[in-house]
Amino acid sequence: MKYSLATLCAVLTAPAVTAFVVPRATTVITSLQATTIVPERVAPDAGYMPEWEDRPGLLPEEFMKSDMNKPDLSGMWECPLTRWNTENIDIVQAQKEAAKVPHCPLEIRASDADNQAGAAYFANNKEQIRSDLLKHGAIWLRGFDLMKSVSGFREMHEALGLDPCLDPLHSSGLRKFASERDALYEEVNKPSLRQHYIGLHCESTTKRTAAYAAFVCFQKATEGGGRFLVADGAAILAELDTKLLEKLYERQIRISVSNLDLPPALPGFVKEGFKSVVDAAVAPKFDMDLEMIYEADGKPGRLQAVETAESPINRHPVTGLPVWFNNAHNHARKLRDRRPCGVPEVGMTEVFYADTMEPLSLEDCQEIKRASEKHITALSMEPGDVLLVDNYRALHGRDVFQGDRFHAVSWFTWDSNPEWRGDEKRMVEKNGLNKAINKMMDWLPKDFESNQS
Ligand SMILES: [Fe+2]
Image 1 (tube, rainbow, N blue to C red):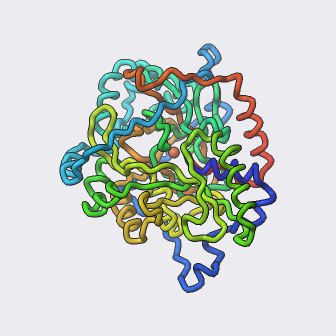
Image 2: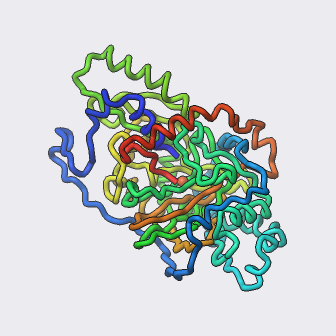
Image 3: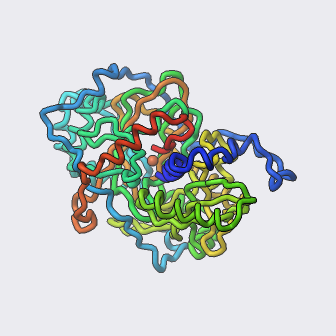
């Protein structure tokens, strides 16, 4: 998702700029904050937290095996363009409609017979599973032996007829594959971000959005935590204060994905020159529509990369159901500053009212937090468990964890609406840049790594 721009900005501008980056919001009181109290960090809530079951998994050398008899999927589809359908939404009516949807996620637990059937279970139940995914927004597949390995996970989504695509921010080069030939990305398992809570988001930018996702657990966190979070965008819409929804829908939102802090005393022409360099050299690599804006959040010398205005509510491309479709719960600064957050200042995000470019008020953030967290299921995913997600309906995130954890994800494009998929496929031969950047990332301090699943 959206922190990667910050990462690459840091790479391309270091050390000149990073020397001035404020290290952590909690430890620094600037002149602007001098009269305010640094907020306490509290672990976010969840409406439902199922128990762990301690089911065994495979060893890494076993679960990482790819089936070499299957074709290489590296030349997969590009992530499709975001399908916005936001005109003339009657908020009160939309909330009524959204309140009627069935619970998300649906749970499907494997029986012994299902496990005996292996991939055939998914081939035989494909229509039902695909229709349930549309109805519920997400399906938690529990206790399936098949998906305990990379090869079995691929058999599962192939049996369901899902068609892999790139991550919306793949072009940044900062998305790491768990198994490239199986179109499988790593989730955020890295030790430096164990204590970073990833709030609710869709895998989406204003420009590109994956249609579906399948998140898989190969190894749960060895020393606790690491629950995967899912919440229904329809349920959140139904829950939220109507006046707040009307306000946000009318004013729209803009999301800043990066903070680059320059010394405020720099001459204007230097600052403008720097902005032009970032604009021309860095932003295009992210395949997002970004505007570079100085001091939008009031911090002197701060350059922010801000996405174009978007509606916080969008109609689902297939069902037409209006849902809460935005990343405010993850990205709003006032929420991040009040929960475990392990990214450096350069990777901090913000959400603005689009018309005035003021950051969302604390009151509005707290209502978004209340309504969102009431509908979070904090999944206790065990090895082999998969969460299928309709990315235009349900939002996802990840709680903090201790020890080692290995979860992975595949993204999918539109398989039954080829006109929505576009005709772009990944240019594997152009991947040299991505590989070079990935390699460079390995040499950087861990703080500079992407922090999103
Ligand atoms: Fe994600």
